[in-house]
Image (cartoon, rainbow, N blue to C red; front, side, top):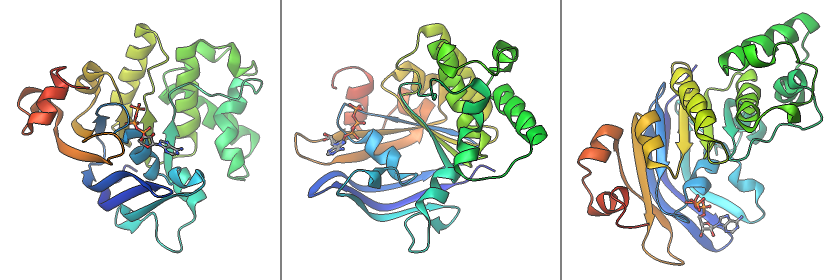
Length: 259
Ligand SMILES: Nc1ncnc2c1ncn2[C@@H]1O[C@H](COP(=O)(O)OP(=O)(O)OP(=O)(O)O)[C@@H](O)[C@H]1O
């Protein structure tokens, strides 16, 4: 299920502004890759190009290639909606549909994709997705209650259940724990470590300890100054990045001297 992502010579624009320049990157399947770097260096922008969410912003565009198992997501015949099904996304703030039931939330993506599904299959999918998101035991007796009735951490696991219910190959997470308390954060981090057995996971985080805890590989981005594009400076095994980075800019950032 998990797939390799190859980014080739990618430049990302908002209108005339080049927000991210010249990214070359391989993202390994069945692993967690963390994006770190100072505010404004383009981590979220780059993440959103990996499932074609970037182009939802008027005037936004990319040059270059993002290949998933050799297929360019920006190829001429590629349907962006199909890409977003293949590459799921979890956002900073948990965003379940508040009045929709817990079960309805899990099935929301499947229904949006117009997939016909029998009642029995729907129940099975709700259970299996919630189990994989480590939420089943907490909600199994209230599946028909609104998603908004859950705690923030539970809502975020519900969003992860919703994302995995459509069987994506890749999961993108944009600061998925930044709105959560430490206990909920640990629950999500444990979940990420479990899910990487099946998915290619990419996570943007401002929390260096979190990058060190959950990721196998870390990519450091930075900007030279205001108005300059963000650039990928270094990508390596997380243990190497945090113990002996090759670039001085990486060392300064992770040791707290910059950013
Ligand atoms: N919708 C947009 N329209 C125009 N410019 C944008 C838009 N979104 C982001 N940018 C610009 O693109 C650059 C990269 O922003 P982005 O949010 O990707 O950085 P980031 O590294 O994720 O930052 P943070 O860590 O603060 O979330 C910034 O200069 C930002 O102002």
